[in-house]
Image 1 (tube, helix red, strand yellow):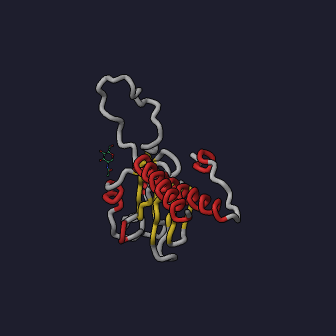
Image 2 (cartoon, helix red, strand yellow):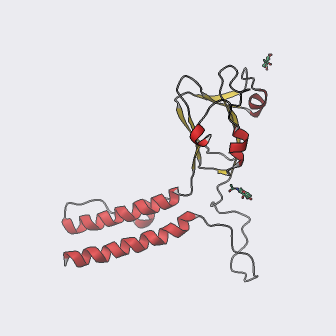
Image 3 (cartoon, rainbow, N blue to C red):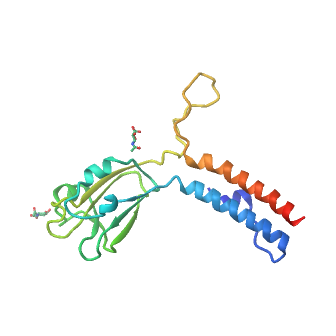
Length: 191
Ligand SMILES: *[C@@H]1O[C@H](CO)[C@@H](O)[C@H](O)[C@H]1NC(C)=O
Ligand SMILES: *[C@@H]1O[C@H](CO)[C@@H](O)[C@H](O)[C@H]1NC(C)=O
């Protein structure tokens, strides 16, 4: 959702009273945007070990649930490894003669998981894929997105509350409260 559209964030002006109000809106906007971003996670592949040989990325991948909007970061010494996105077949066989989808080699490859599907990564350097540098993740729909099968909430049928609504909904009211507090504080201070 575009917070700017919903709240009609005003443009900055040179007059001092409306610039403090603009700052207030900016602050509120940043808090709301942060609240929405909290929903997307960034995962460092291999945690502090990074992307390397001799690590079990299957175990690593089982620690998390990946959803659309999350990001994977592959950290390694540039030139020593790489991150190739491949098909599941190439991932399983470690044979990259076919099935290469994308090649990354920056040393800090940030890969956005933008689709609901399986993603498969290997290091293409000789021996590294069989040596453990292979990662597969299953990306599921964002759990905060409205579900078409969600039961109506007003039927009073004693149904369990809907699953975790996420951090965004709990941070937004706090942002609004803080913004109002600042609003009154600023008007008091300038009186
Ligand atoms: C992943 O999702 C499953 C099923 O929804 C849940 O049981 C499990 O606790 C979740 N794991 C993590 C690490 O969040
Ligand atoms: C890799 O696959 C290609 C064709 O799919 C095949 O010709 C080649 O022999 C395979 N390499 C190995 C090492 O299995």
